[in-house]
Structures are given as C-alpha cells and as structure tokens.
View (cartoon, rainbow, N blue to C red):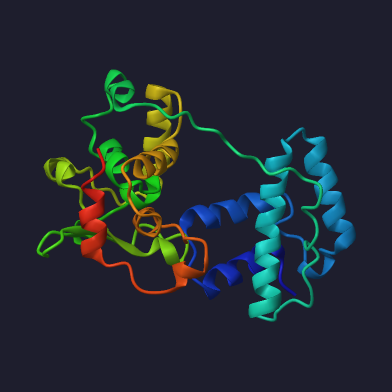
Length: 259
C-alpha cells in the first residue's frame, strides 16, 4: 500500500502541477509522510486538524494545509481511482479564509523604494504577472518577431503554470521594451520567491501586491473586464465570459492604455 509520500508523488506525476503547488503539498503532509494511506481515515484527519490548531497556526494556514491534503486525495480518488475515499472532505468547515489586504500605492512610492529600474518589478507593474511566471521566463518565451510582441506564458523547464487560464499570451507594454535587454533570466525555480522577498524588504509588501495594484489601475484605465482577466491570467465570471475569443491584438491595444 502507498505511503502518503508515495501517494503525493503518484498524483504529482499524473498531471502537470506548478513547483509552488508541489512544495505546498509537501508542507501539507509534513509529519506523516511515511504513514500508510489506508491509515489516513476520518479519525486521523480530525486529529491532524486539532494538532495544527494546537500549534497556534492561524485558521487560514490550517485551512491551507488541510486543503493541500484534500486535493491530493481528491485527485487520487476521483480521477486516478487508487484510493477508496477522500477522508479530508469536509475538514475545512468552520475555518476562516485568510484574505491579505494590499495597499494601493502610486508609482512614485516604488520610485522612492528604488524599484522602478528593476526589470522584474517593471514587468509586474505593466503586465500583472504572478512573480513566478515572470521570474522564470526564458528567452524563448519572449516573442518579438510578431506583429504584437508578447510573452508566451506556458510550462517550461523551470516552472509549471498554475492552471489553464494562466497559459496565455501577454502583450509587451511599449514602455517595457527597454527593460528586455537587461532581463535577469534564471533557471532557478525559486527566483520568484527571492525577488518577492527582496521587494518586501524594499517596499513593505510582497510582489503579489502588484497584481492587486494592476487590477485597480486597469479598472481606472477603462480596460474591458474580460480582457483584463485574460492579461493577468484569471477566469472572468459570468455567462458572456464563455463566448468568443480574446484576441492578442485587442489585449495589446488595451494594455497600452495602462500607465
């Protein structure tokens, strides 16, 4: 019978997952990696939740760790059919979701922090990438020989992509072209984490805050909602989101409205 670690490895091999997701799954099973899967039942899950609460973790973090385990078992049960049930189902009830608030800060704030000449920061500022998407871009992911120069955000040898809407073409903002010559290409899958920590030391919040910032700026610039979602890699809500195609040329035109 599988150990928990072996089950996680099997599920991770079954479908592409981002390195950050794989690391999260590892945190989720930490402490019971060698436990046989058939011994992970409802009683164990309840004990696990109690144990995490006693460690003093925030409810949102407990929820995250339990959720990682639930995802592993869900795929193993419903898609792979290598376990008989998902004992983690329902284990999140009563745990509050965490919602980090990022301040809306103007460009001049980041100028004072000395970030506005850094090609990673400016790539986030003009395009709203997840930091791991941008920091792990390779030269072949930047398409310049095209009527609409763009980044091709796909799985590459350094990192996977979070989900299907995240696989996309992002037009290169005209004001960003000058930063491409000094782009710090890296094959280290932790490059995004390192830059996010660097940003936090310089300006007080992580790189993810720029995704919140650009969403506000896109609304203020009048960028159409479904196009904004397509640029930053979100799934737009509503029935009309399922109709038609978002063209690269439309994304390129509207992105230029962003300052």
